[in-house]
Amino acid sequence: MTDGTGAIPAPPPGGVRTTRRRGRTSAAQQTTLAELGSSWLVAPADVTTGPARTATFGRTAPLLIDIGVGDGRASVAWAAEHPEADLVAIELHRPGIVKLLRALDADQRTNARVLEADALAVLDDLEPGSVDGIRVLFPDPWPKRRHVHRRLVDRRFVTTAADLLRPGGELLLATDWDDYAEHMVSMVATDRRFEPDHPADRPDRPVTAYEQRGLDAGRAIRDLRYRRTGGGATSSSG
Image (cartoon, rainbow, N blue to C red; front, side, top):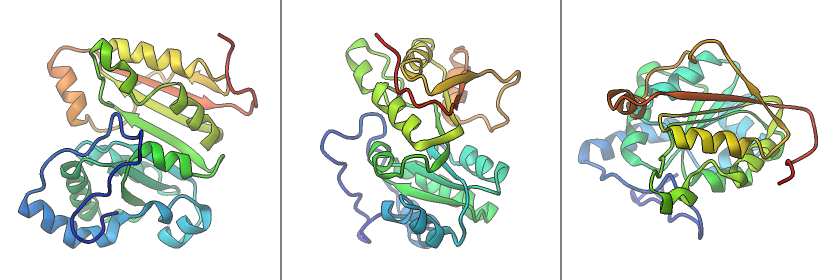
């Protein structure tokens, strides 16, 4: 959440590799933040514990975490698809936050909140076993070899996701870069608590702006879906 002055808090040391502060905020966007932020923007402390989420949403419900919001439509659609759950969308790109706030206002979606923060820091503060779904759609691919270490989906992320998800919970990933898809597959394979789920059809979600860029460039879309098992082993050997 902002501090009331329009300034975004600095990310923690060592954090933000794939979701970083960028994008200037226009006067119209500042107006949107001022007018709609109080309805949907929350602080990390409002959602990282069960009692805090109950106070924030006014109920106790399953929790979905959407990392990166694009133009906001996919986040709103996911919340609408799961009215029984509470969705927390995490983003640092202010123009994207503004688009999501406008989409939430148009939809009057009550089971979604927006968190302006480093996703990795938020995940670290959530309670183990408290999440029912984690989704990352089209994260920054960092295609240059020297930048691969900045990719969000790495071994640490996978382990954290497995710790947070309840047995039966889902990890949903999507990318339009083949090498990132293979990287994701290899990273998730390091944790035995995940098993691949292979739906027959494309997930029923809006085409995001980043997805459309990939399609326009002729790249194939890779949707990867995993389910958290009830096993306790954390990782495979090697």
